[in-house]
Amino acid sequence: MASKKSKRRGKKKVRPIQALPVIRANSAGIDLGSREHWVCGPARGDNKVNVQQFGTTTPQLNELADWLVSCPIIKLN
Image (cartoon, rainbow, N blue to C red; front, side):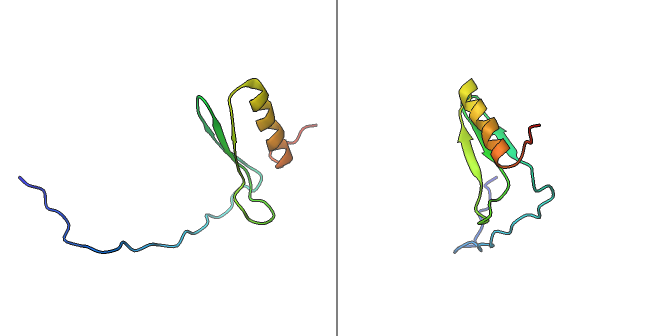
């Protein structure tokens, strides 16, 4: 049985990107990988995306921790 292809042609409708509501302002999301980690912190004062990429070696993970402290994600005593 042959599959039916859509007869609809032309451009797809593009919806504007809408921001999600902020639930916890001082939090971060981390995408862990075997070679690199991508970290998204809270929006900066200029409302630009706050994303950084870090490697997986110990010095690079220390840089990641320092970056989170500067965001203020982590508060050290």
